[in-house]
Length: 409
Image (cartoon, rainbow, N blue to C red; front, side, top):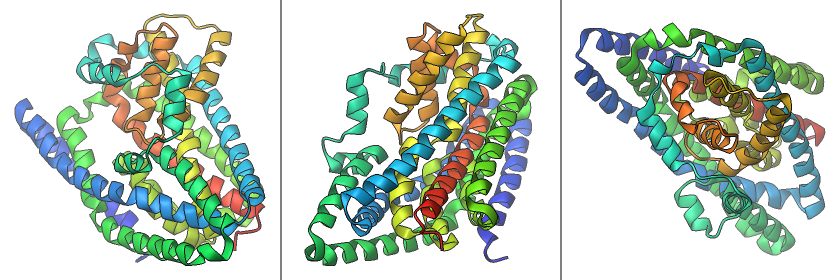
């Protein structure tokens, strides 16, 4: 029971949040609903900020130690190559599944234009830059590691950490004291994670009660089929991941799933992949993955292996086109798939990254980018499944690569 105490606390917090949010929505004035939603969400802000303060130091210390202990460039290249093989395959499968599902179900034809949330959409469109080769390079390669750490730009931190780790490994014995210091620091940060997780149920309560208080459950009245079709796609994607995981991990798959229940619930209830990252690191090491592999693969996965976001990108982009009665040929959709494959890597760590990529993609393919307003009312609930799927995909990727490298105890 102690092992699952956090998961149980989160579930209880979700139930209470739904009840409280619903009663506030039903029995209070619209103005009070908005104020309550704004204020109760501060609980989530506190939790997420506590998590975010740990992300940069945790990624940096664990990744540097992982690469330094892996040794030479050849080993790093081999492990990284295996990881990228999984990442690219999983990403393509997710994108294609989203495209296939949206063409079969046509959810865009069910979307009511009068339900669109244009206020939030204007903000997203304003913050979306067109994706060019130049902006892609800027999102991948940092100009300052301190700037990257200050804004939690994970991909920038990963790139710097890889160079730092390789340089540290090249120094050999002279760098051992530094490696030991970083290893101790990573354990201290993981200890801090345990303290921060006490705030998780409060963060969950704030996130869910805020949404329900402001919108109620009426958001499902019209968007039920859109949401249902997406959840069906996610379930199929989970099935494909678990089949692949069972083929490679065999009987070790079940213990893995037991270990990642808590991180998945944290991601599901807070709609933040970052919130689950520290706990996932801890649980994968407890599961038996080689800590060097975890330290190397997991941060990479958070930049290159967001399967839940991938399936949503094609699903949402084409659904918006359907809502505007814009016909996209199969060739155009496949081109869109490849564009999404590339541009999605350029916004790793950006809040609401999936929506930003969808908005930019719509503009590139002459679909009104303001169409993002059509799916915003239901997006929070879709995001719950997106983020938990990302956690599952990264846990499997890390475990599989660990198994391939003979590092799964």
